[in-house]
Amino acid sequence: MLATSLTAAVLGVEAHLVRVEADTASGFPKFTMLGLPDSSIKESEGRIRAALRNCGYEFKWDRRITVSMAPASLRKMGSSYDLATAVGLLAADGAVDPRALSDVLLVGELALDGALRPVSGVLPMMLMARSNGLRAAVVPAANAAEAAIVEGLDVHPAVSLPDAVAVAGAALRPAPPRSPVPHMPRAALPDMADVRGQVVARRALEIAAAGGHNLIFIGPPGSGKTMLARRLPGVLPPLTLEEAVETTAIHSAWGARMEGLLGDRPFRSPHHTTSDAALVGGGSIPRPGEVSLAHNGVLFLDELPEFRRNVLDALRQPLEERSVTIARSRGTLRLPARFQLIAAMNPCPCGLRGHAACACTPTAVRAYQSRISGPLLDRVDIQVEVAPVTYEEMMGPAGETSAAVAARVEAARRRQAGRVDSTSVALNADLPPRILRQVAPADPAGANLLRQAMERFGLSARGHDRVLRVARTLADLEDSAHVSERHVAEALHFRGRPAVSE
Image 1: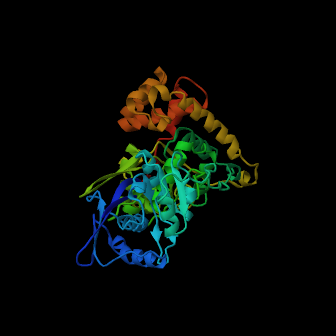
Image 2 (image 1 turned 135 degrees about the vertical axis):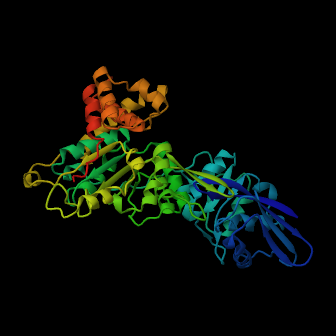
Image 3 (image 1 turned 180 degrees about the vertical axis):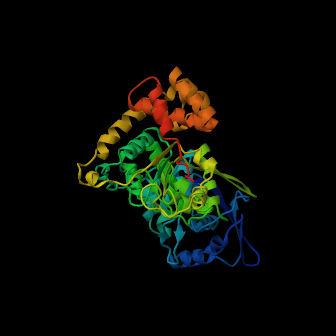
C-alpha cells in the first residue's frame, strides 16, 4: 500500500515542501530510503523502529518497505523527517487514514521511546506551509511557540508519536486557541549617555542610524570606538512586524531555538579570526553567515585590519546588493543580507599614530591600512577619526541619552518613508542612482563641491552617490526638503581617510 505524508526541507533560509512517499509490498524484507537522504536520515530507520515498537504499534517489518522523499533532486539533511516518515509508514499500514495527511505538515525528531524532540528551522517551515495552502502543522511541543508566530495555519503541538498520530488522523480536529504572537524579551541596551565627549563621533553615529549608512571609526585604543558602536541598536527604530518575522526566520533556519519574534535588531560582532564562509555564508552544507544573521540589524567588525583580506573582500557583494549569492553544482542559493556595517580600527599597528609617541614607520602604517581594500572602503559612507577623550570631557556632564537621539532618528526615517511611494526604498543608503538624483539633487553650490571632489580628490562615481545619500540624510535630520552646500560639505568631511605621513 502507498501513502504520502508532508514535511519540509530547509535550504539556506528558505523551506521547501517535501512529500514522503511510503510503500509497503510483499517480498524479501528490506528498508530502502530514496531522495538524496543524508546519514542522519538513513539512521532514522532505527529510531522509527524503536519508537513504533515502544509506542505499541504492531508494524510489520518483514516485507519490502520503500520510502521516497520528493523532490528527489533536493538533498535532505537532519532529523526533522522522522515524524513524517513514521506517520507515513503507519498510513501505508492502514493505521492512519492517508486522506487526513493531504494538507498537514509533520515535523519532528523521534526519540527511541516515541517522544518528539525539537528541530531547527520551524518558522521558515511554517511560512512555507502557509504559502502552499496547507491547513495544519504538527510540531514538537518545544517548537510550538515558534510555530505559533505564523497566522493562518493551525498549529498542533505534540509530545509523542501517538499524540501526533491522534492529531494527524483527525482531519477536522480544531487547533488549540491561539494566543497573541509571542515576542522575545528585549535586552537592556547600553545608553548613549554613557559616552563622554566625542561630539563628532556621536554625530556620525546618528547620521548612520538615520539613513542606514555604513560607518568606520578610526582612532587609538581606549578612545571609545567599540563603546559607540555597541550603542547603535539603542538609537535604531524597533523592528516592524514584517522585519521581525523575516529576521526571526533566518535565525531559526540557522539553528537557533526561537521562543517568539525577535524584539531587538540583531547586533552581530564576529571575531577577526572568522572565515569567509562563516561571515557571508556557505560551506559544504550552505548555511547563513554573520551577514545574514545581521539582516535588518548591525554587523560590527572590531579591529577591522586584523580580518583576513579575502574575508573582508567577501563583503563587497552583500554591501552593494543587500544579499549573498552562493553558487553550488546543484544550484544557486540566495541569502538576504540587508545590514549596517559598523567597523572600528586603529590608525596604525600600535594604535598611537597622531595621538602619542608612535614607533610605526610610514611603510608599516601603509601596509597596515592597505589590509582594507580600496573597493571595500569605497562602499563605506562615513569614515570618522575618533580622538582620545580628555580629562575635562571625562569629568564633564553626560551626553544626550539614546532616547533623545532615537527620536531624531525616527523622525528622519519617517521623512524617508514618506518617499517610499515614489522610490520603493525606505532608507537613503539603499537609494538607487536614478532615484537618488530625483529625491536628493544638490543646489548649485553643493553640486560644485561634488564636482571639485571628483576632479581634484579622485572621488569615484560610487563615492559621489554615497556622499549624496549622506547629504540627503543630513537634510532629513534637519527636516529640509533640499540638499544644500553645507549638507554636501559635511558629507564630504565624513568621506575622507587619513593619509600616511612620510
